[in-house]
Image 1 (tube, rainbow, N blue to C red):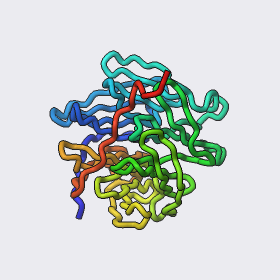
Image 2 (image 1 turned 45 degrees about the vertical axis):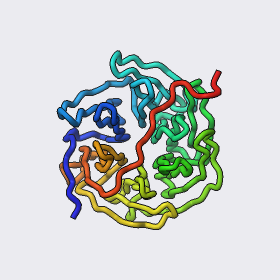
Image 3 (image 1 turned 120 degrees about the horizontal axis):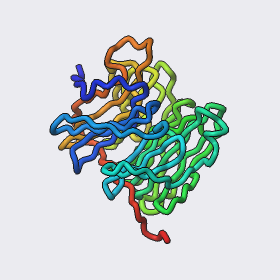
Length: 293
């Protein structure tokens, strides 16, 4: 049986976006609805908080020690020491004001150093996936989405995995890790609520794609071709995302949702699980990219 540990008993309403900062040996994650980013020093177990002015969909590290954050108001750069927040770009200008509840969602810094981020639209398949660079450009890469999610990249940077949680599928693309160009879109899996609709995800060094089955209280581990390798039942109902971390990158961290009807008192907390194969490190966002003016 898998041995889970409670990393942080925080009871997040919507715990999301675990990010491992190897340089500081800290784990970061957010409570999306609360607009709060948590930062846990795993050496001292000291927990700190960063309060943001509106909902946080997800975030990543930057190469200057800060964060790049997808918020309801757009993509922002954030200095962790001074807590200064600055807008980089809003990929969907004015959309959240016209359609309350719609916002930016899951993200991941890619092997190209860009910030890949998708949106979620409650009104239908009008959301999209964007590639954001440090000069403030937001290039639309995929459209026709409802809830963009599950971004992860293979160890060699040649594949990108992407899901739509509402539509229940996982897709894989060929990726040019230098330019961010996508090709050969392939749908590799479709999952029902019972199987676990695909939420946030991460990849390991052996090529497996670990997906949080948010509707079924489990993790689904897939081969790169979409074949289910393993299903891991969790002691909580709604896992949202996973990331690899620890000194050997063999600790899998899991965030989750807490609702009033949840049966487990672990719902909304952060759990960890030791695994055999290390995860793929997620790079930092390049604050200055080659070719930018």
